[in-house]
Image (cartoon, rainbow, N blue to C red; front, side, top):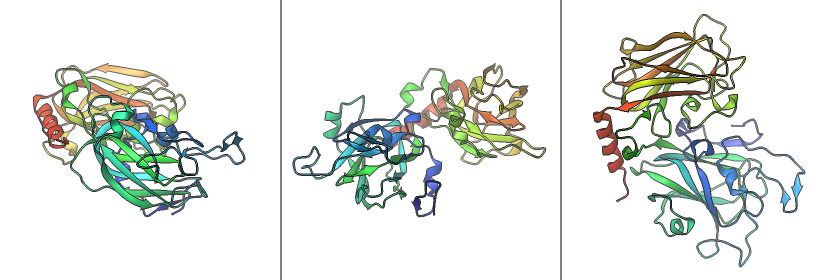
Amino acid sequence: MSDARGGTTVGALAAFTALPDLASRALGASVIWANDEFFADKENLIDPAPPLFRPATFTAKGQQYDGWETRRRRPGAPGVAGNDHDSAIIRLGAPGLIRGVVIDTAHFLGNYPPRCSVEATWCDGYPSPKRLLKAQWTEIVPPYALGGGQEHHVAVGDLGRRFNYVRLNLLPDGGVARLRVHGEPLADPGFLDGVTVNLASLVDGASVSGCSDMYFGRADNMLMPGLARSMGEGWENARRRDDGNDWAEIRLLGEGIVRVLEIDTTHYKGNAPHKAKLSAAHTDDDRPPAETDWTVLLPKTKLQPDTAHRFLIRHAKPATHLRLDIYPDGGVARLRAFGALTPAALDELRRRWKATGTG
């Protein structure tokens, strides 16, 4: 399968790539340590943007690469585990259950590692690299053969455990453009009890359960933390040429009561929706809401371009899902639903948090 970069994807596009990238800088991840980054910076690994390449752009250390690249391994080179390979440690933007990884060697053709492996661990608090190097790591991707200029999709079995750090090992050295760690975010219920929370927060476990169209931008971008920096960081669909409208359905992080809704069209100036409507639904299991389950929280309301709109919701009932309808189409940077989790939802989050603990 070829892609727009002229590279290839190994195997069919894996289903796990529909899940959030827990290692994305946009989600709050960071690369906190690498034993070597002589040719290209470790921070490039978690850039949410596709890797780029400009030929003949040389610095004092050689051709510039949009990725992480270490020096050619020689005796005495900086390394780990007996100087036999290179490693980088990434703090995930959200703790979660890892379902698969993507190791992208885009543009690394004569300098990619022949193999790599990936490990994961859980560490409380904000540990130093020194402490993390002594942690107990679990191998989630055994040594895996790599090719140059390719995305390698590797599913991870259901380990039943949450992790908040991963370690990428290059066997023995070379360059990798991006590392994506797809999984299900898990919220620490201790930070959600008795406070107002964003029930539609991707970091805490909310997700997009359905969407009409994502031509220009993924719908789960609306649930990301922080402010969008451009139109490329929101949800934007194609221009409609019929009488319908676009929509997205969101599964909240748990059953909750919505008090404030925010629809943010920042950066969408000539392509903001004309109007929007928000509805809520409640289901007692994993089934998607039926048409009769929805009740309107915010009736069809006119929106302004490049504006963060906030609406008070007076009489909401407990809900597990939201539906955003935009008329007829356009772009939304962020959608937030502030409110409180119900006691039952908190109990379920506590149960899952405990069940996925490491000891």
